[in-house]
Image 1 (cartoon, rainbow, N blue to C red):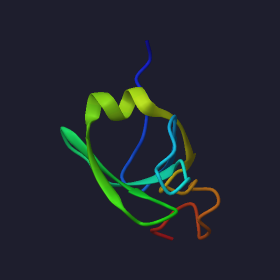
Image 2 (cartoon, rainbow, N blue to C red; image 1 turned 180 degrees about the vertical axis):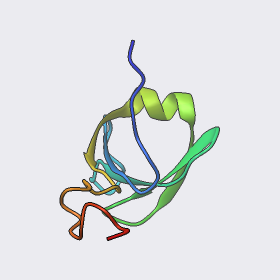
Image 3 (cartoon, helix red, strand yellow; image 1 turned 180 degrees about the horizontal axis):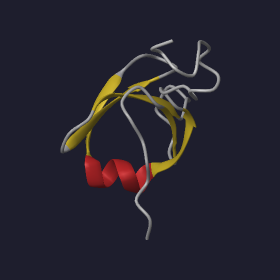
Length: 78
């Protein structure tokens, strides 16, 4: 089974809704435990990494930008 890829600052879709009704969460801390913040009500929850990976469906918005869309030049030295 392939490991799910996620980074700090990503907005992810969870399997179950938060009690406020939103199922979108922002990753605000990573380690053995993952701290996620509800996009709807801003409440944060600390979840063990294994449980988080099991309950995460997909990454909706990544925190990193595509280098081609960031603008600027290809070679920063010129």
